[in-house]
Image 1 (cartoon, rainbow, N blue to C red):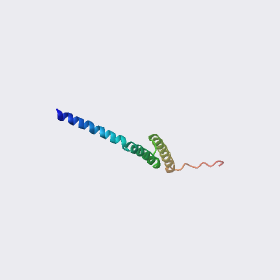
Image 2: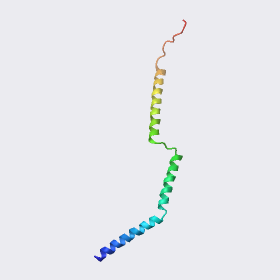
Image 3: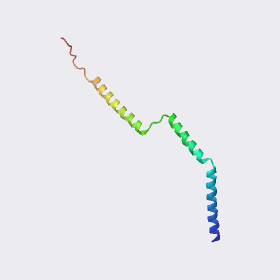
Length: 86
């Protein structure tokens, strides 16, 4: 039973030491700096939100539809020109 207690005491001590090490380490600063760096990187890449992307997709779809209509009009046989005054 003594060995079991020693093992638990060792594990508890080990956990305490790791907690202290993390508390005194720059891990929290690294995480903050990493998040800031990622945010800057995303800005430089000019990323857009999902909503902005969906708006652009809808716009492109509307433009594509209008282009299809214009192409169809150009391919249609020309209508007889009506000359005013004749």
